[in-house]
Length: 331
Ligand code: ADP
Ligand code: TRP
Image (cartoon, rainbow, N blue to C red; front, side, top):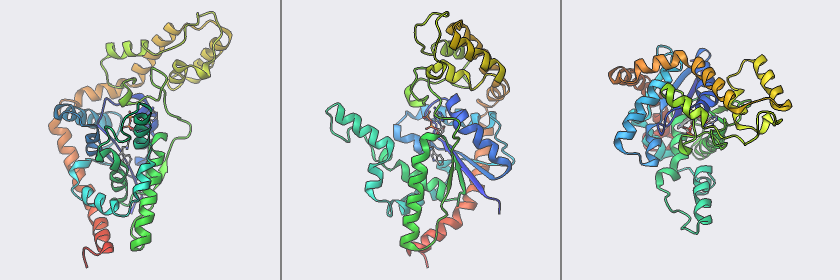
């Protein structure tokens, strides 16, 4: 059987260019070599308790994004996480071999605890069990299909390591049952910075959303934070946020020219932002067209994802059966 590549994204905000360079683009490119499995991680989105309306809207935004960005639904398996009833069962079996200490060290939880302590609050203030167990659910997403590779951005590296740890524990306790996956992490795309210079993230409200209306997108590009140097002053491109984003889109020759302008003086931030907006709109012209066509066609998106879920379940069921037998639930 063809090797499996699997990845997901949670519907917690509009997909942005960090998601594109860190995950969508490299993940979709694997469809030719692997059996590609792609999903909307709607159960993971619940850890942030969105309103039901928000969740609905975002599920379709993320679903339309996958297809608009080039996912071939005839070749790949595309589905919603919550359409797989085997997932919660697998999550429980994995929870029972997951040391609590391992979860204490998970980045998202640890960051929240550190923030609470800094503010003099209870360490677990605002932490629900969904957030705490997030890495176990993600391990289930990966292990349930015997995934070989998992294409994700840098910030998910720890989650892949945790997944391997959990699988190793299961195998040690119950005998060889689960396949250990490998992360495929683009080393050349470190985290794409957001318009405020922190990592671009749906949760920081600092993104350049791929599918925003043109006017909103241009406005957001103009909001990229820079220093207050005049055009004449020399600047350091490598510590400039705008340059770090611009370089992802610029043709090589033009990038060299712009780099020289930074170093020697003569670069106006405003003009470069306008050029960046044009480049973004040109790069995503076709996906943006496709997205507009798809976003309101819920019936189509639902049908595609339902068909995908059936295929995913067919792969999941024998793996879950293996797990149930290994732990002694079945003979
Ligand atoms: P966000 O942080 O915006 O909520 P997700 O956690 O849903 O994004 O991430 C979806 C995928 O996109 C993951 O594989 C993640 O590693 C990748 N990703 C997210 N933000 C960035 C970024 N700024 N640069 C590169 N990759 C990113
Ligand atoms: N945690 C991932 C993120 O925040 C989303 C995700 C959920 C995922 N399950 C997954 C990614 C399984 C890869 C494989 O981006």
